[in-house]
Image 1: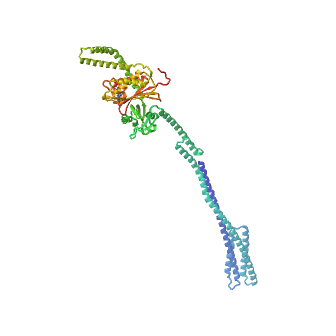
Image 2: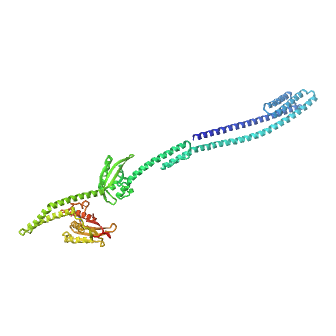
Image 3: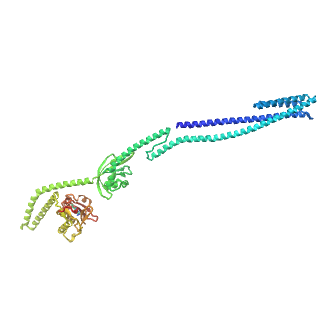
Length: 611
Ligand code: ADP
């Protein structure tokens, strides 16, 4: 580019020098032409003066015959002026041919002067005088004729030279105009060419920069020369380096994104800024799945929206602890979109990017862990109950049987007054209750292995209902009438179950329902078949006191009871027996009061081994 610039400047200077010199030479020449023309004019004037002098002298000659002849001094004066005019003709430079003519003319002027001087001296001799006058006239005429010829020649030459000069002037003018106009034009063209040498590579670099700005790092500069080629190379190297670093960052980002998206735990990035604290800025697929929202929906929410109201109350405290540098590890309850509450173990801490603070929260769904813990707890309780029951059976059963037998014997004695017999019977009832409790305990701790046979659930329900209706809890009295509603699926498939255990299950539930309706109500029995999963459903519901959340969570726990004389083993045994028969049991609190127990049992498949 430097070379281009030097070439451009050199050409411009050369053009200016050549153009200027040419104009100078042309101006010189035209001036010389004008000098020559002026000289020609002077020659013409001189010749006219010579002609005039000759004519004046000739007039003086003619005047000699007139009444007022010119004086001698006057004539001499005119003659000397003629001679001096003639002499001045030699002052100019002439060509050889012109000089020859001038010498000839000078000779004649000399002759004319001699003739005149002789005329002036020969006035006494009239004959010679006359002859001399004649001669003088002839010379004068010849002189006049020659001078005229020379004047004509000079005039012709003058005209020719003037024409040539004017033509030359016009040509010079044209060349000057062309030079004046073409010079800047050429410089402009050269300048633009040189400028293009600058602007083109700058344009290429600018375009490349613009594309790079849009994130296109594949761009490479091409067609650049000289210093711009070096600049272009540096630019390309920068783009390659940027591309390399961007790729490294992208790969790293992809690795972390994969980690983020494939994590089984919910990962949230939350704002820790004062006004937006808890806003969900990013969430992974696991978070969306866990809570029943889409990732996009989560990103419009605050973490409080996922907490249960009790857990949400602790959010400001937890954020405050994190801002003080603490890493939080706690268990709280979260809400799914459908309102289901589930336990999560939260691990969260603050991190900073730029000058902004964020919270990284990892939530693990611990529903299964909790269930396992509960199952373990139950298993331990069962084991303890089993050990207790076995111990009690061993230690208490026989003495208790002895006491009961003795008391029954005493109660049959007739000499006992009626009041004492009533006391004895009450004691016998209490002993029976202890025996029942022990039997229940043994039943719960070591239930007998189920004898699985093809069983008609509707029939078992009917049998249990028949015997339960005789129970004092169901025996009709006006104050606590229990209405029974049956809604059996008449095409209910059979199940593989132990009918005796099914009876015990239904019996427990029906007696509990009666207990829950001390003022009467409705007991509803419903059976149905869910073809999809191939499961039977048995729903036993009442319109009794119902169950609150605290009771629901513990209702199947052994020894949990709200009754004054309850054992808290009925539902624990029921659940155990349902599970022994491959089924499941759950409880729902009904909206209009009352409780509903739902038992699911697998239906006996077509062709399955039948007992
Ligand atoms: P128990 O009947 O000896 O109390 P259960 O295990 O059978 O023991 O029942 C545990 C508790 O569950 C009861 O004390 C009662 O509070 C509650 N319960 C059981 N069935 C019902 C029902 N149908 N309606 C309301 N509460 C019930």
